[in-house]
Length: 160
Image (cartoon, rainbow, N blue to C red; front, side, top):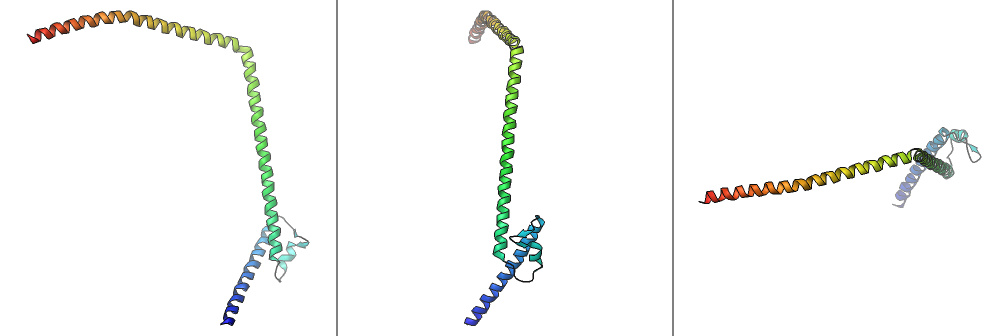
């Protein structure tokens, strides 16, 4: 029984070792594609040719270091781009502000006069409409009075 368990355990360890070697070779291939020539003092091309077991832990540590450096480099580039965008945005806002100030200095008084004139015309029109409505109110009141008298007379005739 113990021999069976030991044999199964050894088979699992052998399978694990084979998987680790396969993964180490995949990582070596990936590193070669990325243009990396050495891991520590050993050349990757020499490691790939070797028939003996590779040092999985050393290869994976090196690969993790490469990935971490790439992530850090990506973050640096991302932050640089963000800063460039912020600088460009600020410069654009300042440029728009200077153009707006220049326009206001050149045309501000004219535009202000046009706006004031439009406001005065609108106010005069509103006052005119209000006056017309007030004069129409008296006419409407007398018209309504006449209509009410006609309705009362018609109503009295219908009741008789």
